[in-house]
Image (cartoon, rainbow, N blue to C red; front, side, top):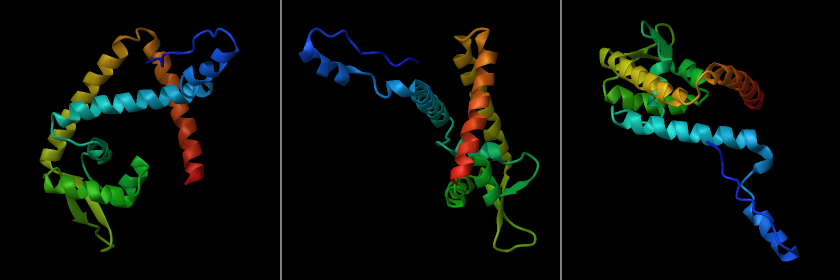
Length: 169
């Protein structure tokens, strides 16, 4: 989605001050601005659709991070999602309460807990994946043949951003 350029031609010296006020936000960093907007809008679309199946923002990502045939520790999930372990722990509490995951004691370290999808959690993951496939079709429909090229570019951008993020943490 393009941010509308509200810049209008000026008439005279007095109007030049208005030109600065009419510039679109962050027009000198168009790529970053567009990525932030697309991310925000895509997540809002996903959240609206997830609400219909009883999932809150972020829970979909935690459910997807867990293996279908095993467990993963809280810190492993946190690493996979690039969030703090305390964030995962809070989300895990809610998902466990809803019967979608189970907390399992670590076999050799009593201080650690692993997370496992329940049968209901696996079923919910299937719903989430179907919902994401629908959104994928909706979003890529208007891109035509360029969808593959755009996806490749976005993957390269993701790698760049993750490298920079990891240096900061």
